[in-house]
Amino acid sequence: MTDNSQELAAVRLTDEAWMARALVLAHRGVALAHPNPMVGAVVVREDRSKNARAVGEGFHTYEGRKHAEIIALEEARANARRATLYVNLEPCCHIGRTGPCTKAIIDAGVKRVVVAMKDPNPRVAGRGIRELRAAGIAVTVGVREADARQLNEAFAKWIRTKLPFVTLKTALTLDGQIAARAGSATWLTSEASREEVQRMRHESDALLTGIGTVVADDPRMTDRTRLPRRRPLLRAIVDSKLRMPVKSGILKSAKNDVLIFTTQSADSAKAKALRKAGAEIVQVRPRGGHVDLREVLREMGKREFLNIILEAGSELNGATLAAGLVDKMVLFYAPKIMGGGGAPMARVPSQWFSRAPALSQLSFRRYGPDFAVQGYFHDVYRNH
Image (cartoon, rainbow, N blue to C red; front, side, top):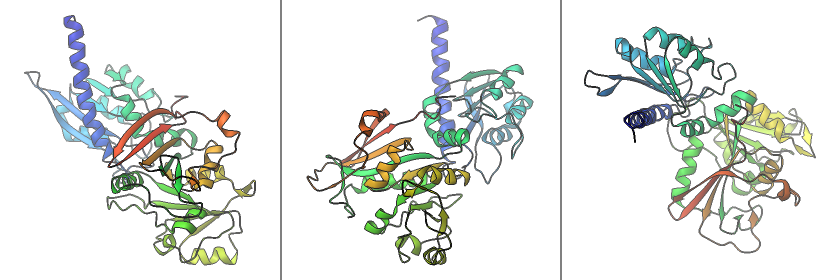
């Protein structure tokens, strides 16, 4: 290896380490930044002995308004001059709720900016990087890009399509059953898996389920992590015929966070009773005699819900998969066999298999005695 290549490798390792810190900071915006992306920034300055240290750090929250780069630059003050800025998302170059970060970076005298990924927002999408380079700032793009993309995968889809990112999550046995029989509740996975589900819920804006699951399980569907959230976790129910029990656990715990999608009139006696119990009723047009799931997602996207977990039974899981509306699947497998008579993970038309896309970017992880398989159907960056 030549001296030059050794130097480049050392720079790369240094960049990866500081970007890891920026990603840790960005993650502090979980449940606090949406509908904005989660962004962390670190200003790094070398002393005369070439020893690098962080002189400013920041992460974004929606209520805090200021972007991560601005917070980090303000903390660094004069130390930002000739320093390197690490940020997991391309700095913005437009005026929104705040001014453009690119101008602040240029004015601060930063000499180099390291960016994990370009901004999927069409208003930015490379413009911020070009502005920085035009001002004479060296810009490196793509350091820990895969981690950065996964962190803001929901934002990436929503900002381009105004549709939420849908994750189908379920627990099942090794032979693919989610319950002993249709319409029954069956406890399958371990406490470790359930803790991970709570973490997933905290990172999400909303949960979506069907009326069959509500009737069978009477779930609360809450975020029990007790970690701070900007908005309460929305609980959305697909209920074509308004069968929702007025005394269900979801409604008993309702605090302006329950949404029921139905084909029935929002002015019916049942709808009025459900509203009195704490639910909001949204009437959507039918599709094949059922609630149009595309309309459900459009409505949730309009309300700036970026990340939805589908926690449902065989029917709604199957309908959502068959409609091509699932972006990601997380399947928690218990090391058990259910045998005959169980409820499958999803009921889909027999012809679906021949045209169904395969999951990509598969990953596996253990949770106590269980294991989880995660994979993606869609690349939310495919046109970026």
